[in-house]
Image 1 (cartoon, protein in one colour):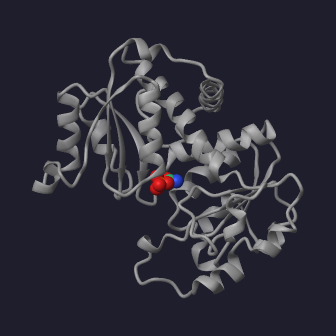
Image 2: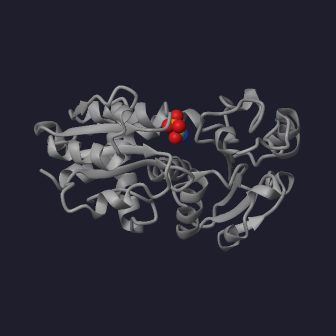
Length: 299
Ligand code: CP
């Protein structure tokens, strides 16, 4: 693997290979990467806790030398572009850059460059894609159900702004899941019809195996939105009352950060049906698998 820019660019075989390798890492397997010297840099131009820090843990577990980078104290503050920042990383010998950036498809000019040789791992591009979150979500679902075929999955909430929804709907549909979308109608777009049906959360709750809740992305709403927290929770959220109607073996997912008592009730975040903390821990193992697959080609 040279770069990881979108999840859909991976074949089903590559996806399953990454899931299996992540499971091996979870069981304590070590990587041969530990025997060589590799450098990576995590370039985050948008805030992050989980993606940034779980990549850092993954890198350290693999014995990779992580080059510190803070956009605020780097030459980005003098006006240096993303392209020139990555060109510099490449020139000083950084093998792979994990990048989160507000601009959708920021990576195109980087991978088209004849000079930049560093690999790019997309840690989220605006409202575009979040392939590493998608892969850790797939790992979490696979651990639970052992397959994707014919699983009923509801993706609920701020569909318009969610790069997680964008990546997950494409991959889950391709892997054979039946998708449903829930949430405010104004955040549903006709282009999602190719992936699943738009229904209310009350219609979804009793029939799905996975309730995948999305964060309301206040920072991407130009003029705010018309819902109070209480009204959003009542009309579109996973309330305690709704959770009681879930199938016994159904699970709750959320990429986090969670707006507690908005997308889902506070008590549900750590409930027995929630897999939210498992998603976070799985992030480390999936990111180890991704880093290994990319750096392996550079040995
Ligand atoms: N889920 C996720 O991408 O979280 P962060 O924004 O904290 O990285």
